[in-house]
Length: 122
Image (tube, rainbow, N blue to C red; front, side, top):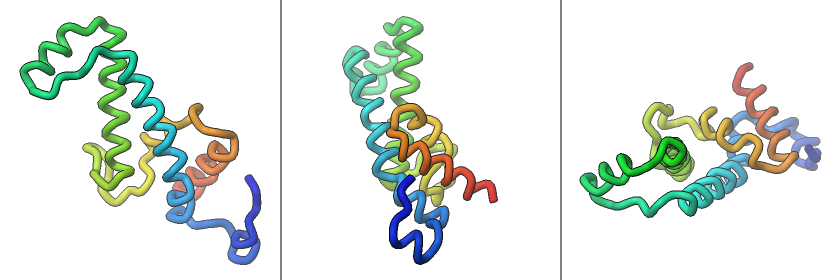
């Protein structure tokens, strides 16, 4: 991770500052995964009845991908200001979002994630 002039003068960013730094990169990683999953699944209908039939038509692998798609979309929504179920509404960077982005970001972002996690546990 590169040390910026601001960090040199004021010390490392706080947890909130790190969450702000991570936001765009984590959101982009999750959005890319969502886009890839959407293209690998049949089109998802809008109505509840059609969606129920759609779920029943999926094979086990597609059903896992569809569940992951729902999860990732909820996390993207949370990062966009629409709190996800099971996540504290005021959590700017949920652990689940970090987990889902892990392995799908660059090395510097992975370093920021490690640093952010260390600040959260202190």
